Image (cartoon, rainbow, N blue to C red; front, side):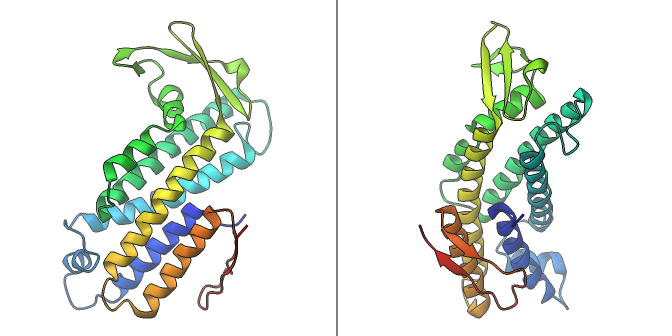
Length: 243
């Protein structure tokens, strides 16, 4: 499986951060990396390192879930495994959301409140809150509204839940993941581009050009185009074919 747009963004962020960090030799590292990455607080470097790991780890979890579903690769009917995978993927969704929001804060993406609302309004986040976090104490317009999800109705495509008023909701996981990924990809591409242009605002040279070329390639993929992206990126060649 080719790396996703989210994984590619994480690799670009990590590449730039590692390149800057590798050049710091004779000065206090934390203060110097904070300055070079245009961060405000000394703790921001630790935040960046943490969120990069979370982005990559949670994306691997999502890819596995989308490939094998709730049942897992063995396809054995085991409710215990289904619960583990269901609670695991809902936690991964929340962690990835948190990592993206932290990155937005670090790089000061314009209209960040609007972008946060876009993520938080995703149906997948609502699904996570009901099934993976607040099943018993879910707040519905400020009123506690306990939910149940229907074990017998779990399958790889959809999950049904009911609330205290016996109102049923059905969540199509494929559709929910598609909506969530589209929003996360869009925000992360623009955030990564801003990070590059902020850090390499002056004297970016060939390094900046290569990174921006990768961002443009990701935009092409996002728009439905085809990009040839070799594993060996020392001499990157990207062929773009737009539909």
